[in-house]
Length: 102
Image 1: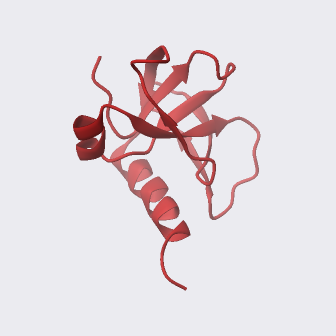
Image 2 (image 1 turned 135 degrees about the vertical axis):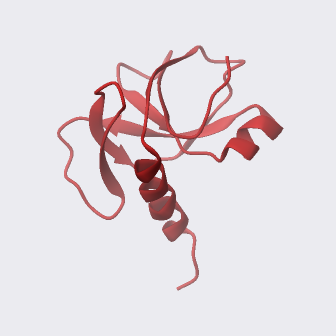
């Protein structure tokens, strides 16, 4: 299966939560792995907590500071939904902001 930035996935071994793929598509294609952040229900919005609704209705708040790297060759990953481009941009901006210079 091919995965893309903004895909909403479930990952075996990581509970019932959904995750959002946050890595750039070029990174995913080059390395075959990707970063994810959890998508949680009933979580307070904030600068690093971005509320989203997937194209198929999956709702939650992306917890941008909790990045994990996933190798889909090792863990079973199932795509369930995807985000609109505006949501992908907001999440990417929040994550990038964690690593910018002061």
